Image (cartoon, rainbow, N blue to C red; front, side, top):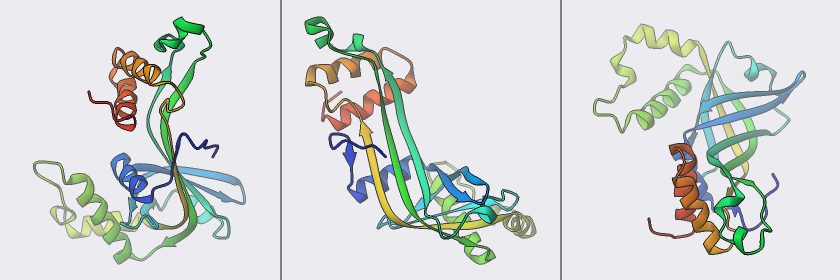
Length: 210
C-alpha cells in the first residue's frame, strides 16, 4: 500500500496487538476467476508470523485460492472524514483541504488450508476463548452437545497464513502542525461516536492527554 513514512507503522508487536483489538480481518485471494474476499475473525500468534481462522466449507474461496499466489489480509480500524474547518491554520492562510483519517493494517503471506477436524477444533476453541473472555459467563465449545459441535466443525475448513510481510498505516494527521491535530481531535469529538474513535487514536498517537 502507499504508506508515507509519517504514517508508517512497522513494529510487529504494535501491529500484532492492533490486530488482536480489531479482531476481524478480510482474507483476499486470487484464483482462476479472479479475486475472492471474505471477512473473518483471525488469530495472530505472539511473534506476528502467522494467522489462523476458518471459512465455511460452502464458501468455495478455499477451493479457488491459488496456493502459488500470495494472499492479502487487511484490517480496518477507526476512520473519519476530516473537514478543513477543524484546522486553526485555515483561518491563518486558507491552504487546507479535506482528507480522511484512518488506521489500516495489511499482511501478505502464503495460504494453507487445513481440513483436519482436530486442527479446526483447536482454532475454533482458541477463537472462542479470546472473544468470550470479557463476558461474565463465557461460552465454551464444551457447553454444546458433542454431536452438534462435530457437525458444525464439518461445515468449516481451517486456514493458516504464514506471513511474509506485515505493515500498518496510522494516518492520523501526523503531517499537520500540533494545533491542527488538536483541532481535528476537538472537531471529531463534537461529532458522533464513530468519528470520535479516530480522535481517540490521534490523541494516543500524539501523546495528548484527554
